Length: 393
Ligand code: ADP
Image 1 (cartoon, rainbow, N blue to C red):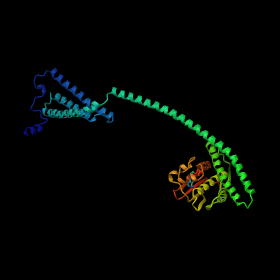
Image 2: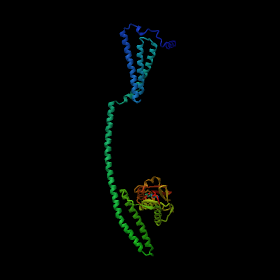
Image 3: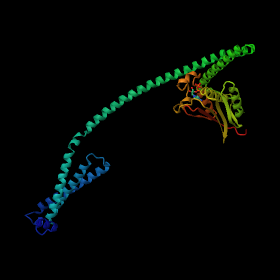
Image 4: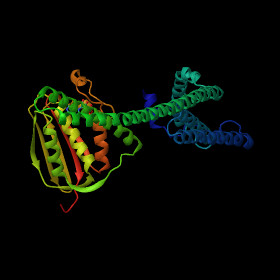
């Protein structure tokens, strides 16, 4: 213990040894060869850690095995110090400090060896630049193959898209021709039915009833044909609008009066504010008719339908509320699509092609308005449409 305490208390005391110049028989050449070599080694040893530090920082701490780099940093640095002390010894024989520096270097060297040993498996697993290039070449080839495959698939998709567009066009043309051809005989049929109804004797109630039913069926058929005709026009953007100024409240009244004859349900007008709009009279009448017809059709067991027309700022909002089956929320957007009908048990007992709301939406949007609904299954539905108001009623 006394040796240790004597060692540390005389750490920088050079008295026990002569300076190295006076120890043995050094010639100037021999001494300076030794000193300069030590200094050059030390300079090289101090430069290496600087380069290592630069590498670590430049690669933003992403160098593989970075901890081992730091250990080497310390190892080489401490080696540098051992050479500095070896040279200093020619003038300052501080052998105790030199021993400490050697000891620290020994510890760091062992740690560097242990660190190096630990990374051997991972270092061996690292790919060489040649191997990496090979992998990249393989991947590039794979990407090229998938690219070619995608290009081919894309060409095929484009071709099938073109074909499907062509078929859709043909279908639309077919629908247009068929509905047009159907319209003339159906109009004649309606005319004959009305003449027959006029000519039939008042007493023959059976015949009168039958003619009335025929007329109703012909009206339904006419509506379907008109929807089909409209749809082809909507698709081609050929639905023309005859814009004029008219009183929407009066149109609503007339339409309700007209449709009230066809149903036992009571259509109640809750509010009907006087308001003028700039729009196509017949097309807006078609919108109201459609919403009312749907309300009647899909609430056959309910007693009443509520209608309201209100104004707010520069907009008029018309609502048609029924207390029928309602529409589940996941169908709220889809019912405005072409040919969309909700697939429910009773659906097919009601006539319709799923075109009405699609056409209604197009008409309202073309007028700068909006169409929307609120509905819950089993609780009925409310359909709304809004239109801009023509100022100066
Ligand atoms: P359709 O001619 O079949 O009535 P629409 O486009 O007018 O075509 O309506 C699309 C579908 O939306 C209908 O088939 C029906 O399922 C549903 N629908 C429309 N209005 C109502 C309503 N008031 N109540 C419940 N369902 C409705």
